[in-house]
Length: 333
Image (cartoon, rainbow, N blue to C red; front, top):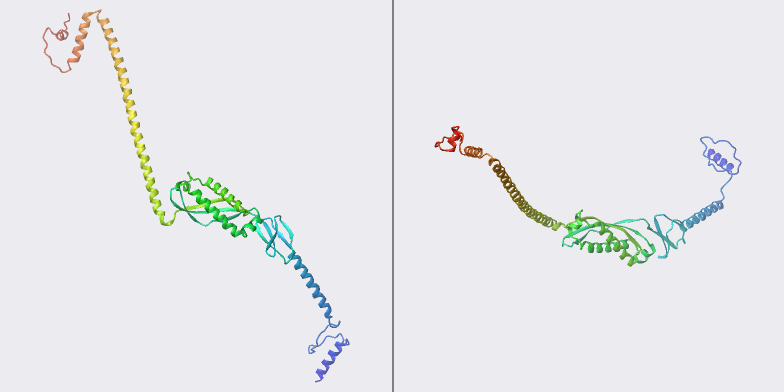
C-alpha cells in the first residue's frame, strides 16, 4: 500500500515539473512524458491540410499534362468526341478530368491476313497465306471513318483479299508456284497499288506499304489428285519433246545421208573423169613411145598378157608358134 502511494506521488510530481532528474530504479513503473507538456492539436491539423493541398495540386498538374512519343499520334477526346490530334512529340496540355488522351502507332505495322482459297486461271484451287505491312497516314481520317484500328485492319484485309483473288485468277498455277515463271514480284506491286487506291477512296487514313504472299498450298482434299494430274501432264510433255526429238533426229539423219550420197556421187564422177583423162593420156604416151619400136611394143604386150594369165604354179601346153613359147624359149624375132 505504501509503495502505491509513493508511485502516485512521483507521478504527480512529474506532471507538475517537480520531478528530480534521477533515473528510476528497476522496480519503479513510471510513465515517461515530455517535459514540454502535451502537443497542440492545431499544429497537426495545419500540417494535414497543407499536405492534402499539395497532393491535390500534384494530382491536378499530373492530370493536366501528357507526353506524346516520337512513335505515336495522340488523340484528345472531350466527353467522347475527338477535339484534337497531336502529331509532334513532346509534353502537351489538356483539361483535367474533362479531356482524355489515347494514342495511335506512327510506325509501320505488320498484319497477318487470314488464309483464303482462290481459283487460278487453269481452274486449280489454292490456299493463299499472305501478310501486309501498313501504316497510319492520317489519324483524323482513321478515327472519323474507321473508328478503331481493328476496323481499319478488317477493311484493309477485305480489299487485299479481293484484289489478290482478281490478280491470281488471271494466272495459271505453274506461273504462281514456279520460281522461273513466277510473277509474284509484279503481282505484289499491283496488289499494293490497287489496295491503296481503294483505301484512299474510302478515306481511311492508312496506307499499305507492301503486300507479300508467304505461302501457297493446295487444299487437302484434292492435293493428291492435282499432283497426279501434274505428273501426267509432265509425262505427256516429256513424251511430246521425245517425239519431236526423234523426228528431228530422223530428219537430220536423212538429210545427212542425202548430202553424203550427193558428195560421193560427185566425187566418183570427178574420179572417173580424172581416171579416164589419165588413161587417155597414158595411152597417148604409150602409142607415142611404142610407135618408135614396134617389136619392143609387141614383146611388152606379150609379157603383160603372160603376167595376167599365167600364175606361179600354172602348167600350160603351148604350140611352138605361140608368142608365149617364143618368149619362154628365149627366141624373139
